[in-house]
Length: 344
Image 1 (cartoon, rainbow, N blue to C red):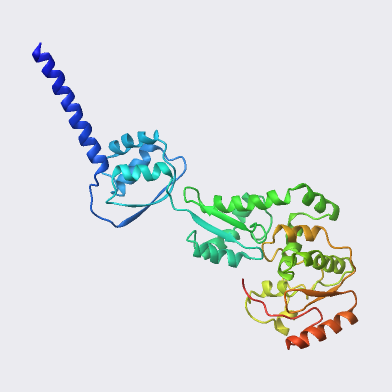
Image 2 (spheres, rainbow, N blue to C red):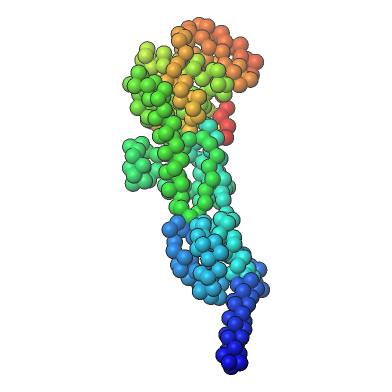
């Protein structure tokens, strides 16, 4: 009888010993190296594969202990990019992944930003290299997969702040941004406006992007839209400086006479009608203004050098305003208006 009792005591002691040793191995780091290690766990990666990935990176010594420890979070670890260290315990790593304490990157796309601005922001936000983004934004296969027949993603990146975690690919992240643009354009009032004018998404975003670049004030956007609509109906060229700059790619430089006379698919001084495509990413106000021009007969507008414009219906009236405001500014101008363009 005492022998049976002693066996039970021994078994209990052994269980306690191994349990305590297991806890010690989980809680006490097995390495003193504090060098940071970045690990990306993709979506739908299984628990055993996560353990193998961490072991390969020499972040854990035992896959079995990692799996056992993950039971504290019911085996549900959150995918993403994690900044870990080799001096972290298995318990510390599991806790971090169980709570989803992963690296999150913010991408802020401002209204009026073009692909080059977005590429720069992508790189500054450490999401991807700017050159790689521009390549992807013009990749025909990627565009076709998104359902676009355009030459690039210009105009289709809805202004907003987006948060990116690397458990998904960058293409999937960008696709979600484009899907937001599709959602904005599918709103009832927008769809009705496009139908009434016979516009499709491409034409709507193209005109809206021009309005975005021309009008800083929300209340002026329908007026700028009216000028463009009226000129289109009369068969006049749109003579929009921002399109000239976009086509030349000379952001941050003054427009020259050569720029105005050199043909590009975006130089609206050299042909009648809209440019080849959008020149930036417009906001919702610009999109609605493109579809709802003010009921006015304006054909011209000139900058008042304070962010606002003065509008007119005749070339004589327009010329007087040009002389007035551009003389004050101390620069020469053409029929529409001349101004310096600054890359945002």
